[in-house]
Length: 480
Image (cartoon, rainbow, N blue to C red; front, side):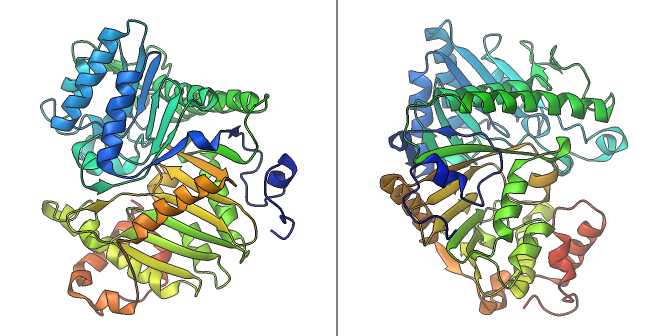
């Protein structure tokens, strides 16, 4: 980064930043239009407000929509928006497996039915769940095979990037991240086209509440050729990216100090923008950069673990959920032990990290933690950046799910301060992890959980990273 000696306000300087996504399209945006939403309640209120103000289009991509009182109020506003605006286009994309989990009485299908036929409701089914695997894997377990995981919320030309799902806990006491981009048609058109591209390869909800394959989907995701389906999905998503690339090359009236790069991660169809970006960034030995990385689930892939265990790794803080802030804390049955599996993985990782990497656990009474993303700061230049979106940086995110991230890079002092404050709000409830952390009673991992963690990896379900396990011989001892 020695070549960057001045404020990064011109194209030449941006092009000299060695860790920028290579040949990736971007849009310049007015930094004044970027707003950081602070709390789940503020996020919910902003959703309702944007729905009421929308006149042209509403596009929602989420893992699922809940069926509680908050979600019903949200559906009421969507229904009113369609009644008031006869020309309003509404598109909703969810995951098929997660969106239909629990049967007709417990999922969001009944709520969404009210929006038909005016709205298009798509349900993406991973092509990797097929044959015997589809027959024998039960609900919830089958979701490990792959999901539609993109979280995108579009209202006319306003976009919210987030990792939150649309259910009550995400509107009350499950912390996530939310960044609103106002009045950016180029980016809004890209999000609209991306959701349509995936939707065209999905199932659709019908007026009667039944689900059938979209007429635009030429190949059935799990009954016909896997390769043919993947080729179709790849082609349609790449067409959207290519169209955005042409738009981003056109004239833009905004100053060059703030850019947004979409970074898609769809490993099942060999689209790996996020992975290539992170691999390049984490492999750098540039001590002028400092990173903060966050994930609700500490579960990085082998490649990232190897890079972070390098003694010359970047200066980096990693924030993840404490056992009490894990989304599976006090869950019923065996799922209630999942937080301890993540404790085990974080303990193994803590043993192998270099001196420049620090772990933090988020723990806030009666709150769970779901925030994900990355903050990048340069000690030598005026540059700051953040990456926000749906990815947890684990095996499923990289190789199995459909993910969308957005890299925001800026030299604008006001925006940099907003991003810094967002990060500090998270760290206010995060405690540094050290060896003593794993001696505490709430971090004790029974032998059978450690054994299951290894079996899970050996069976190639790949929920947990193999490389973290291979660095440890800790099977018969205590978790400490």
